[in-house]
Image (cartoon, rainbow over all chains, first blue to last red; front, side, top):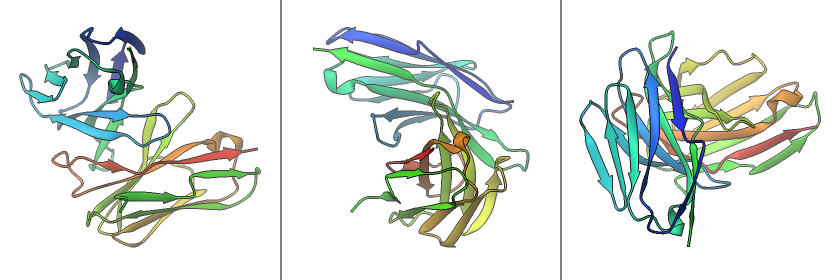
Amino acid sequence: EDQVTQSPEALRLQEGESSSLNCSYTVSGLRGLFWYRQDPGKGPEFLFTLYSAGEEKEKERLKATLTKKESFLHITAPKPEDSATYLCAVQGLTQGGSEKLVFGKGTKLTVNP
Amino acid sequence: DTAVSQTPKYLVTQMGNDKSIKCEQNLGHDTMYWYKQDSKKFLKIMFSYNNKELIINETVPNRFSPKSPDKAHLNLHINSLELGDSAVYFCASSQGWDSSYEQYFGPGTRLTVT
């Protein structure tokens, strides 16, 4: 069964203190790995899709990378507004052959000013 | 001009009742989804419709019945509510059903069963 494990569960950073979030996965044939951001009381918001090992994508202070077993979300010089829960998901297959997203539990990031 | 909207935002009801959650998207997408986010924060797919046709049904109890009257709407009806149904339910939509397309999520409906 497809699985996604994110670490750490929670991370506190000072403003400007760079760090990385980890997403390790097992999936039978990766079709895509997604990163989402979720603010309290809101739905997840799409950040990135990665399709193959070695691929990297950037958006402002965020950079996502992918290997055959894990993905990292690097946060450079974070600001308080980057505080949120970051969700990782892989595109797997249902028993019926349709594609579905399997989410990790998320990493709750808090950036203190 | 919310892209994916859900009503109601909060729903408090007693065990055994029947309730519905409505979802509408104005993005012109072909595929819509229902997810459940439980108290442990795991977000799990329940159903997916593509062009009004059910394509994913993830071993959800028969008490849950999705209905898609048209491509822009996907409603969720729940019969005989149980305590374990308490969760946040998210509707989402995407341009297509495969990994080429990101999903856009609604704001969620927090269901509390007492």
